[in-house]
Image 1 (cartoon, rainbow, N blue to C red):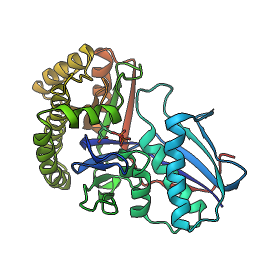
Image 2: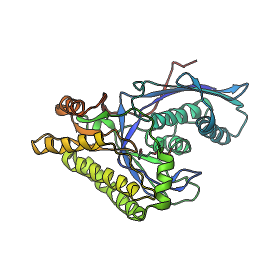
Image 3: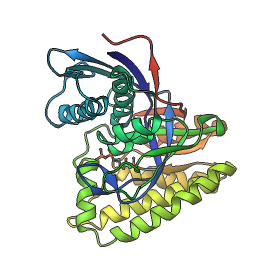
Length: 328
Ligand code: DP6
């Protein structure tokens, strides 16, 4: 009745931006990401408690944060056929304080794996991916390590919309992702609201969907061949296109800060001088630099020279996994 799991966050190289079903969290297009180590979230779930209790990073969760967790737990109870009672859930991330990185993807992936095990359900990456998706879309790509593709799926009930691992972490061990924290403030428009606003008001939205869907198989081929330059170029243009679609919303949605553009410009100059470094950018001002092991120190220096307050160097991460030590 009690289980603990650890999961890593992921960064999308082809982004997910927009839902065709807000309740089930079904995307308009497929996406592709890399799971990142060493950052992680550990979550313990125990069924049979007197009342539902949700604790995240030392605080009792309230409002929508709590609701999203309870929703995942409810789905586990339903799959297990009931009789599990209330749950106590405690989650802790080892993300540097206010790293500016969302821990929700890792959090919901760890929750799904731990809750299924605590309910006595068999280990099943596909089922855990579908389950974690109910908490946050990008979480379904953190159940497995390495490069994961979240397939759009066709069914209205979402049973065919989950992430599959395309390559494990060991496929490309020299790849590096360097997170440049330029600004730690909470963003004004959360991804969930920003993507909804984009779907509803951006005239470029359909083009975004078509383009992103077509980029996924290209990205897979590039990763297969381990071509850093081609992957960097693809990741950059996909990030630009996501942000361009959001910029075209009404009113416009701009996640870039002046410092973000400064860093991107500097990156281009360094590239002209021969440094293999590219960026991707989620719905916030902090770019993630894509490079290789031989250039990660230089990439960190570049980010700091452009005003990064913190830099987190990441390597390809592994699967979400059960742990024998519990948080309570
Ligand atoms: C820009 O997965 O956080 O990071 O499904 O509403 O919880 P919800 O959104 P979330 O959105 C992630 C958006 C993104 C791109 C990506 O990770 O693919």
